[in-house]
Every structure is written in structure tokens, then in C-alpha cells.
Amino acid sequence: MGRLGRILRQSVMAVRAFKLRTLFCVVSVALGISSITIIVAATEGAFKKAFDMVALFGPDALLVVSGSDEARAIGKREKTLTLEDVQAVKEAFPGAYVVAPSTSMGDVTVAYRDKKYQSLVVGSTSDFSRAWTWPVVEGSDFTDADIRGLRNVAILGSHVVEELFAKEDPVGKYLFVKGIPVQVVGVLSDRGTTPTGQNLDNRLIMPISTVMRKMQNERKYISVFRVRFVDQKKLSRYEEEVRLLLRQRHQLPEGVPDDFRIISPKEIIKFLAALTGSLVVFLGIVGVISLVVAGFVLANLFLLSVKERSKEIGIRRSVGARRNDIRLQFLGEAVTLTTIGGLIGFVSAIGGSRLLTLIADFPIHFSWKAFAVGLLLSWFVGIAFGLQPASRAANLEPIEAIRT
Image (cartoon, rainbow, N blue to C red; front, side):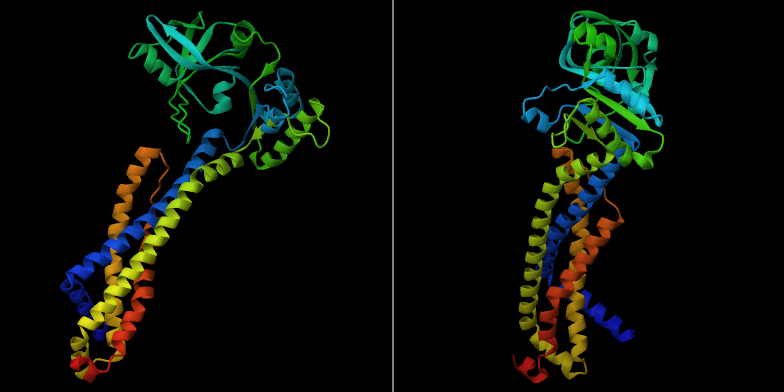
């Protein structure tokens, strides 16, 4: 153990002595390790974001959307779901504790006094908050009487409140939606943005009957409806049963594509994986190339170092150092350098990830896995690319080395 300790001390002394070699090796390894560390953190961040979104979306929920890419391609109407479809799903699935239809209108002018704002207007039922796990933090929710009475009431997203009311309490105030006076009865909690950057708080919720009859001149068709089931373990089976029920109601023959789309929590995970996949692949290629370049830099610098230190190696061999001692010393130097580079790379990755998050709002999550992967890769580079120079140093004959 004492012999090994002396070899390690000599390795550290050599690292401190050859400062230029140390600088080049550390910088090259740090660049590669920082890229790889960001990849691991980005992958973890993507999955964490996906599961956070699934929890927010509801692991027990299905979202059924009117129309589909295939249906639109063959010229079918965009809105294909009806209020009767919603009622049929309620009756067919006793295990569904919420079935909430919605319809929407984009870029609607909302005005309060001298302020105007373009907002998304969503028409829904009194189950909206429960269907989307989106609580009302000020005022109150809709009631069934609001829906039946086609009342002009609204619940505002927090961003709409900021734009129109600033610090003024909006509850009880009246604003104009497409020229219709609407009373604010509540304010939704902050929800933030989607991974694609869409502001979720930029919306105004009104009774679906009011939006359909007074704004859309519509009595039948809706945009989406959301279903939440008591037993979420059977969600895949429920998804297929809902699909079969709607196909039967829409009289779609076998082979004809669905004229609706069902989004489940699995779809959200797939979407985020696709969204982050391209950037992760790009960073992966850059990281691997950086590590290979770092390895070649290290190997070449150590081969030069072997030539420069041949007399030192010869003297050490002549006074009793074994071949294995020389090999371990050079490997120890390589691993020490790559460990320092790995630690610097990990710190650099934290700084780089903040820049990435600031520019692209990319989900990053650092954990012990990112640190462990970075450290293990740095050791791998040190051993893999330092082994050949270390073996060459160990195989030098003492007399020839001293003469050189």
C-alpha cells in the first residue's frame, strides 16, 4: 500500500510540474465531459418534465380532440365531436367520474375600460376545474345554473388578469368579450407554459352554452372533451373502448381513419421525447467527438512526455522501479488529469445548461447520475488513451533511456 501511495504522489507531482500539458489535457477533457453531462441532464430533465406534465394532465385522463390529420387530408370537417357524443360516453362509462366538453376561439379581443388584449376563449362546463386539476384561487367556479342560463360570466387566467387589471381585483368587474359584457367570477391559478412555449394562462373560461350560442352560433359541435376515470390502471383499455364507441357513433367503416384523436398520458411522453430527441442527439455527437479528440490530445501529449522524461524513467528503473510502477505512475497522471477535467466539465455543464434553459427553455435536471456518468467517462478516457503511452514508458530499457 505504501508503494502504491508513493506512485500516486509522484503522479500528482508530475501533473503539477508539467503545467502546459496539464492545461491542454484538462481543457480538452472538460469540453467533452461537459457536453456528455448536459446530455444526461437533458435526458433526465425531459423525462422529469414528461412525468410532471402527465401528473398535471392527469394520469387517469383522456383528451378526445375533434378531427384528425388523416380526416383533414381527405377533406372532412374539422369539428367532428358533438354534445351527444359526450353524453353517450357519460352513459357508457360508469367509471368515468368527469366528462367535460370544451370549445374554443382563438385571438378574441377582450377589453376592460381602455385596455384591450387578444385572448383564447374557452367554453366549458362547471367541471372544468376538476377535469383539468386547475383550481380557482380567487372568486368562484361556474355553476350548472350558469350553463343552463347561458350567463355571461367568466373565469380568467392569471396572465389575462395581469394584462387587463394589473393590481386591481378583477372579481365582480365587467369586461367586454367580442362586444358582449361579461362578469368576472373567478381567477385560475398559474399554470405556466407548455414545452413548445404556449402560454397556458392566456385564456378566459366561459360557460360552453354561452360561447356556442352567443359567439359561435353553434348548437351541436365541440372542439374537445376530457374524460377522467376512477381506475387509471385500465386507461389503455378505456382508450380503445372510447375509440370504438365514437367510431360506431360516427358510422366509420373498417379501414376508414378516425375523424377524432385521443390523447393519453403516453402520447405526452412520446411528444416530449420527440421534442428533446433531436437536441440530445446533436449534443451526443458533439460530446462523443469532443471526448475522442480529448483522448487523442491526451495520448499525444503523454507520448511526447515519455520522450522528454526518458532519462527520469531510466534512472527510476535503474534504482529499483518496476515496469508496473512506471505504468501505474503514467496511468495515475492520466486519470488525475481527466478527473480534474471531468470535475471542471461538470461545473461548466451546470453553467451551460442555464444558458440552454434561458435560450430554448429546455428542461434540464442535474442529479448524481449526471455527475457519476461524467466522472466515469473521464476515468475511461484517462485509462483508455493513457494506457499506450504508459506501456511505452514502462517498456523502456533503463540504459537506453538514460543514453537518450
